[in-house]
Image (cartoon, rainbow, N blue to C red):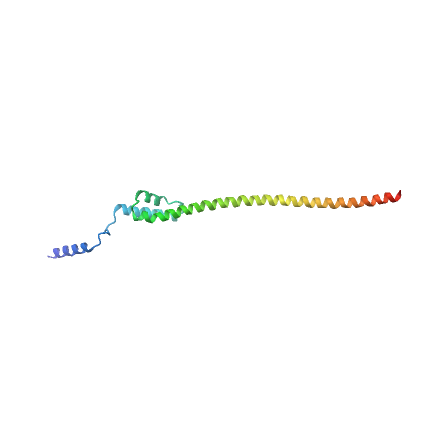
Length: 142
C-alpha cells in the first residue's frame, strides 16, 4: 500500500513538472556551457579572441550558450580592432615625436647659425665704420 501511494505521489509530481526544464541537462548543452565558461576564462586571462566561444558558436550554433557568446565575440573583435588602432596611433605618435626631435635639432642649429651671422654682421658693420673713418682721414690729408 505504501509503495502504491509513493508511486502515485511521484507520478503526480512528475506530471506537474514543467516538461521544458530537464532534470539533467543534455550532454551537448552541458558541453556548451563548459565551452562558454572556458571562453570567458580566456577573456579574463587576456585572450584577444576567445577561441572557445568561437568553437561554441561553430559546434553548437543552436545552443542558448552560443547565443550568449555572440555579443561577447563581437565585443572582443571590436576590442581587438581598437587595440590595433591604438597600437598604430602609438606608432604614429612615436614617429612624430622623433620627427619633432629632429626638427628641434635643426631649429637649434639654425639658431646657432643665426647667432654667428649676427655676430659676423656686427663685426662687418664695425669694420665698415672704421673704414669710413680711415677714408675720411685719408681724404683730409690730401
